[in-house]
Length: 176
Image (cartoon, rainbow, N blue to C red):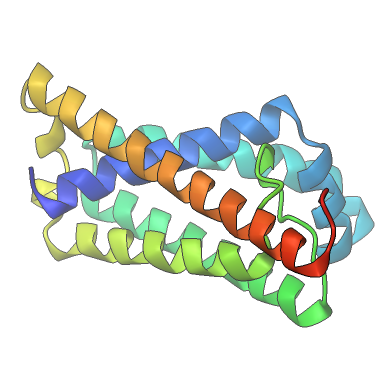
């Protein structure tokens, strides 16, 4: 298992999860977009972003033009991080809607941290794009990479949920 192949699978899983969540429950994402983009752009952006995330995830897994796919992921993450930083600067404390309504424990600050870690994976892919698709070399490798990627995603969600609960207990609130 190479860092590049692991990064490919993790980023494809994250992009797919984010896109699927936005498509299934777009309310939170649209709410955030209303604060970030002009009103006429909210609906198109709410539809375009998850489709773009799915397209890039499929592109990553396809093995076609691996360097360009890795660059697309890095560009998306830079764009998403800029939006999170803008939310932070504007004092928007609500969840970014990055994972639909499933990520209520998230804040712009935790989203920036998450994206910086994902950007590190994207940059790791660029260090040797030919190794990006080694995850698909055999069934055992596919399974191992999938379990590792899903585990990291679950650990992130658990960590952000626990941090939110701790913050709520500290402030005396028991519900978000």
